[in-house]
Image 1: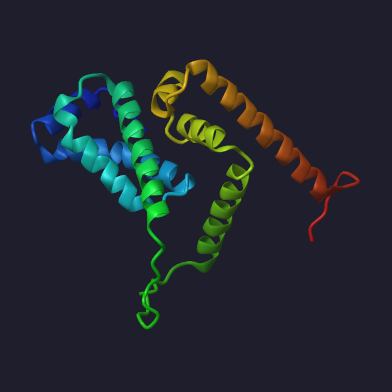
Image 2: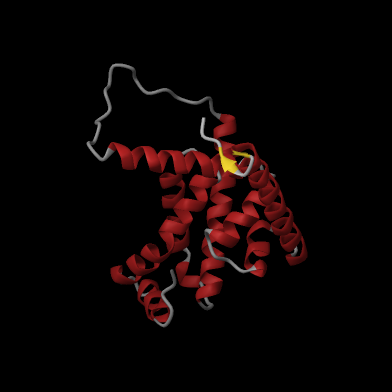
Length: 193
C-alpha cells in the first residue's frame, strides 16, 4: 500500500503536528513493518513496531524526501530497532509469566485460527531455509516492497550484494520447495499421510 498523491499532504500534516497525518502514515506502513518484524523473530513485534514509529515520528520534522525515501527510512529504523531488540534479549534472561494468572481467552473461529497458525508456521519454516542476510533481503523486498537500492541502504550493503542475496534466496527456496513437492508425489500423484 502506498499513499501516492496523499503522501505529501500527510507528511506535511504530521510534521505540523496534525493527528490525521500521523495516522495516515502509520496506517500505510504499520502492517508491513509489523510483518517484517514478526517474520524476523522480534521478541515482541508490536512493541518493536511501536518503538519504530515513535522514533520515526519523533524525528519526522527533519525528514525531507518522497514516499519511497520515507518508506526506506522507516524500514531502516525498524531494522535498527530489531537489532536493538536482539541485543537487549541477549543481555537479559527471558522472563516467565506468573503461573496462577490465567490469560483472557478470546473466542473465535477455530478453523481460521488453525489455518492462520499453520500458514505462519509454514512461512517461518520456509524462511528458516535462508541465511539471515537472505531473509532480510527477501522480506524487505517482498513484505516491505523496497527497491534494491532502498534495501541496500537499510541493511548497509551494496545493491549488487542485495541482488545476489535475493537471487540465492529464491534459488534456495525453489530447491527446497521442489524437494518437498517430490516427497509428496508418488508416481505423479499426491501422497497424503
